[in-house]
Length: 216
Image (cartoon, rainbow, N blue to C red):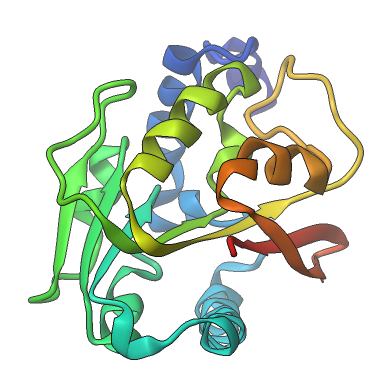
């Protein structure tokens, strides 16, 4: 396995090489590819259920649920949170991801539409989302590509819309030879400073710092 990983075409952080890595990872691990593999397979479901409860509690403190009608689940993977978002907010959810194999594993729901995202080509989605949900996605995208992506995301927010972000944070790490890039919380608040993104909570996941952000 170690030799195979060394041969994979993702040793430098280009979009195409990273996508090849995630396609391989989805083939190798199935739905677990979209999660931290340090979690034992038998514990992943319980962890995700706990995450839903914790993250939704945070959102409920700052959002009016009856105003959330359209949600974008960006980087949805196999839909870990897509249907839960639709149920919790009684809203329509557009869930997009660049890995077709993961989308095929996502659960069907009458208010959830799954779309393939081919970076940098944005899929044909509704605009003016009331909530954009991004959980453990941006850390897998090279920093040079994020300003354009951030602009596209904020353009798709409604005037009163909120952007929620959950990412691993900490001291900046070099973007070489890896598929996941650690950045300080200030990196993300500056990236989305035009919508007033703020760090709302910091927590620990398997010994790693994770920060929850929400725009004003």
